[in-house]
Length: 259
Length: 348
Image (cartoon, rainbow over all chains, first blue to last red; front, side, top):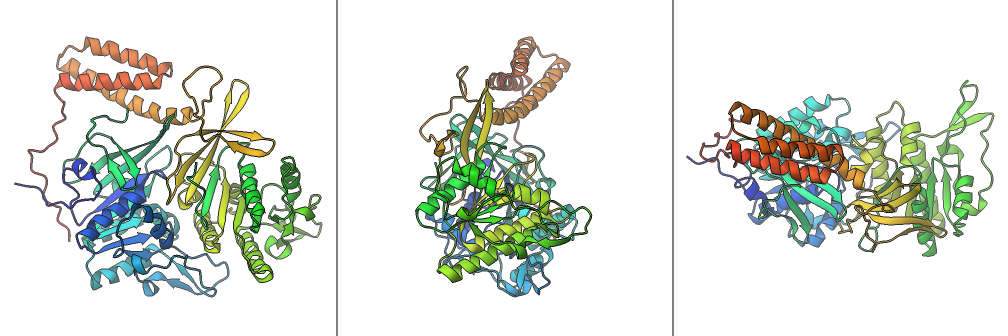
C-alpha cells in the first residue's frame, strides 16, 4: 500500500527531505529568523504550482505586494499568474474615521497587473485587516474558485497586527482549522526570535520546515530541517542550503549535519 | 557590502548596542543625501537637536541643509498644572544651521510625544516640503524607535502602532533608516521583521580596546555580503573595511565579535547532543553493550565543553553520538518506510 499522493514543493532537495513532497490539502509552517529565506521558499513553492497550471494565492501581511514583485525579479521566475492579496493594514487613524473591513473591499490582483508603487492610504478612510475579515474574504474567494496553493506571509504579522481583541493562540488555531477545512495546501511563514523559545504556533500545523541562520567567520551559513511532518516519513538530518539566482537549493548530497 | 547600496523607498533598521555608532551611521547616510542635493530629514527622539549638532560637528560635516525635527519630550509635568501640548501642533522643522541651545521646557505647557503626533508632524512637513519646493524628502532617519517605544507607547498596543508607523514610512516612499536597539534577543520585535533590511552594528571589548564591526543581517530583494566586517569611527565618520576579514580564532589582538553570537547557539546544540548521548549510554548499560571507550570520549567532549571549546566539543559529541547509534543498532534510525503511512486524516 502506498501513502497518500504528494505534491512537489519546487525547492530542489526539499522534496527528497520530505520523502516525495507535501501531502496536499493541509497547512504547513515555514519558520525561521528574519532574513533566513522564508519568503523566497514560499514563493518557490507557488511557482512550482503555477508551472503545473495550478491556481496560487499569496497573502502578503508583512511587505507591500509591489515590493515582493520587485524583490522576486532577480530570480527570473514567471510569476505573472500568481494572485496576490494585499492584507497590509493601512496607516492607523487616530481620529475616528470609517474603517473598512477588507472582506468587502479587496480582491486579489494578478502579479502582472500589479502597480510598481505602493498603495497609499486614502485620506478619509483606512483599511484594517483583522483575522475575522481576512477569513471571510478567503471564504468568499474559495466559493468562487478553487485554489491549489496558498502562502500566508506571515502568521506572525497576522498574530501581531490582526488579533487585537482576540485570544492569540486560540484564534491562530481556529484560523489554521479554517484553512484545513478549505482543503488547500497552505504554507504559513513564522518568524522565530534569534534565540529563545519557539512560538507555540509551530505546533499547530501538520508540518514544520525550519530554516536556520548561523553566523561564523566565513559568513552566514544556512540550514534547513524538517521539524515535524504528520502522515509521512521524512529526513531527520539538518541540511545546508544556499540562496542563489535560482532561488533556494538544498544540498542533500552531503550527509553533513550542522556541525 | 550591500551590493551597491539600499533599495530606495523602503524602511530599514540599524541595530546595535549603545555606543556602537548607530546615530553616526544615520547622520552619515543623510550627509551623503545632502551632498547629492536630496532633501533629508532627521527625526530625533533621543538627543536634543543642539547636541546632535555639536556631536556631528566634530566630524566636520556640513549638515546645514539638513532638516531636523525635534521630537524630544519636555520635562514631564508631574502636577498636571501645566497643560499638555502635543508636539504635533507646537513644533516646527528647522534647518540644522538654525539650531542653537537646548529648548527649555516651558513653564506653561509641557510637550508630550506620541507616535501619532510624530507621524502627524512628519506628514505635515512632508506635505509642506512638497508644496514649497516641489520635491519630497528622499532620506529620513528616525533616531530612535526604541525611545519612541519606551516613552511614547505606554499602555498602547505597540506592535500595531509600529506596524502602522512603518506602513506610514513606506507610503512616503522615502528611504528610511530606523535606529533601534534590540532590547530582548528572545522576542521577535516588530520593526525587525517588518523592515526590508537590517544593518547590525557590533561592539565588543578586546583587552582594553573597544572593537567595532558591522554586518548585514537581512536585505530583501538583493544579494549582500554576509561576513561581519570591521568598522572604525574615524575623524571623518564611520568606515567599514569590506575587504578585511574578521579573525576570530587567532590569539590576542583579534576581534571576537560574532563569536559570542555563534557560541550561544552552539552551546544549546552541544548540550542537546550530549544529553542524548548520555541517554544512549544509559540504554547501552541496560542492554549490556560495552561502551567504555565512548564514555571516555564523552567525558572528553564535556571537558571541551567546560573549557568553552565548543567546536571541538560539538565534533566530539557528534562522533560519540554516531558511534553509539551504530553500536546500539539504532543507525540508521529506521525511517518507517516499510510501515504504510497513515491514511490522510479525515477532514470535514
